[in-house]
Length: 609
Picture 1 (tube, rainbow, N blue to C red):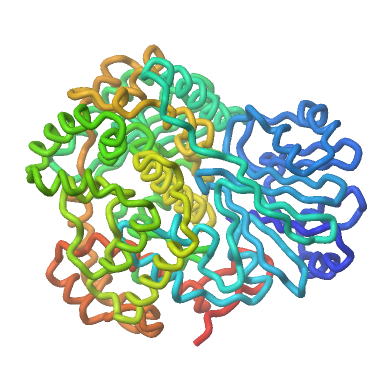
Picture 2 (spheres, rainbow, N blue to C red):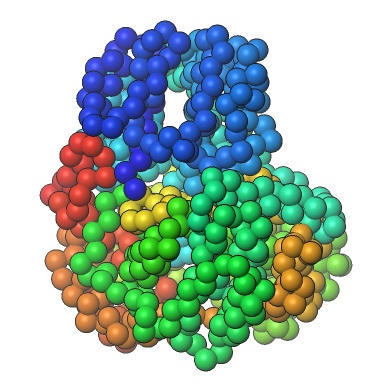
């Protein structure tokens, strides 16, 4: 998608930057002074704007906002931060941009689906919703240190690089903060505008909150009328979205692609859901009708603001969106984020141990038996209550060790990241420096509770992914209702012990949607595996993957050893988990090397050779 916007301060020097952004279809919204404030190209259907006196507010994205209500709410706004009150209670996923007497407020979403980035261009502070737009405008080059961090598995870029991007001199506003500028463009202190909830509600109380938030979130997807589409994997998350969308959508198209794993019963559950949705149009694709994972990766070029691990199934997602476009879909709903919101991470037992040690130990003993973990290793993991800063420093020193094992590895602030076996010593040094730099300022975790921190980090990784996919995929945008701020807040408000019930799969989601989704579908006890699809794609496109290591730009940059990577590919080694991140980084660098069309109305910066 080629939507973009750039925000400018209410200062005379900003006019020269605005002139550089002229082009066909480019829109301009002024400050109250008449100077340029917002410049860009965006879908008018995604905009709700209002003005009152010297206050201006623009909401860009999917929301329940109404211009008349916004106008009444900003009539008494005198400070930028007060503009945030005007959007209190709105559902959806959107940017909030405000100019109050020339002072500016800008923020995205806590899930990172919407972000705000900022550099200085010709001494003028500039902000935008896409980092690559600012990189192209300023001529910034990619940062190799940040790219090295993206190679880590499991990914930690969303926290370790919270205020950094993959471009030199382009900074990110942390997802939970808002950017503030004074009238002359001087940057005020960032304001924390969102905080994670305290997990204090009972299952019944939290279910009521989730029901309202999720229904409203899906409502913002269907509110425009017409046709929307949705994944129908057969899993509880996507199935729930389909039933919510069917209640309001003018027309619903569902898509199910059948997995190759004989132990995956998703097809059975998806068929049951289709029977209960007779008014929807259902597309069912066999393994031979839909592209494999890794199809076309060797020649893939995806100009975007950052690397994306989902290059693995870019061909599959492109095929899906092409098919729903043929059926008239204007928006596609994905169930991503549901696992993170409704399956508490094992580290919630570490949190519990601090307040109710005997209860925690009984539950840990049960989990220990299931994971076949030893008493001593579990005890050490629970008693080693390190700070988040200490965790970052420990992780920095463990990058080349074997991955943390099983259950005990999941009891910290998250599983410690590891460098892939093909990372060079120089890349490992960059990763180490980045983790230590992140620890240097004694950072706060995303939440005081390890389980909430883990969930939010996973949500932000998913938010970054969906943002990049929407920049690169042709067809309707993809929406992630489970990552809407209100849904995240509601889901994380539950006491973890209430959301974990032996023999019940995702009890919070089931309780929230009782009566909206058929009870026999909410009773599904598990989730289907997709390992067979991964390895089938790996085997079928083995030659293409090996060829992609030739003339590797990551190797040229000194970040990977291609011979070690090829060795892992030839032997289908267990260490292939980080492969997706490496492929995403390679495709990204090749895309910046002149391999694809610019997503912005002026030439993108070329990678330094």
